[in-house]
Image 1: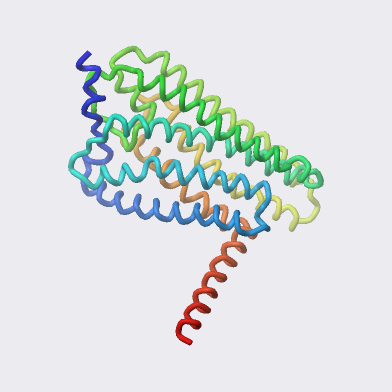
Image 2: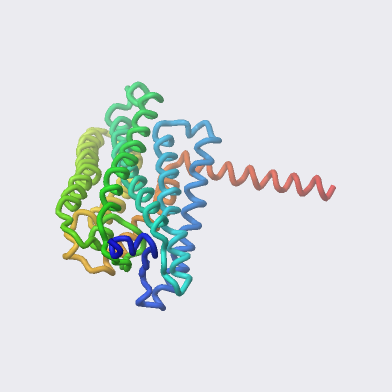
Length: 321
């Protein structure tokens, strides 16, 4: 019993990249830089989506939800990781680890569902353009977003609760960058067959099923685009969906590698870099990709920046005058 409670009393040692000090120092700068840019980029999307009436569309509504998820998701990992990387003592409290486990699991699962919802939105926009406003009415959009958030909450409560109940028998060393379900399951000193099976089922529901739905949506989209006579029309339709498809490939590709690949078939360093990618890099890529590929968002950002610049100049002129 004393061995079982040892981890909860003294917390965990979050090893991260501590075995490679030079790499750790380099990654500290990169992660800090990416984290700041991610906060600024996603916050900018949230701001312009609220302030610019041109962006009060279903796509931008879901994009705002995605930005909110990304801000919370990367914040649940990056600050603690940066603090741990910047100190000699790699200890992380047991309570902090459990909180991170619940929050990161819930937000990551919500993003999986949200990306599938956004694929349905692109299907409606390209394949049913005349019925788009009827199909994607505000009440349905709010319901779909709520399903994404609630499904993440439910799976986090179930999966994380089952994980924290596992006895660790004094094992404290987490050879990872944050508290994640597969890593904690490996620390358990009892048979984890049930937990692994439950994690596999959850991974199929939140990873494989959304990917299949997205592929089906894009199958219909491709058929609809190929029927468009004008080259300009086809280019516009593909441009509408390409940004979302890039995000899907990047996000699902890395997270499937972590959750559906057998733990014994990957090295610890591979798992660390893959987790780093979908928790730190992907939340930064989302606002960049959507901003570069979406003319309305780019226009709204430009208007917001230029408008603020003009206000600053006018204020300065009044003060000087």
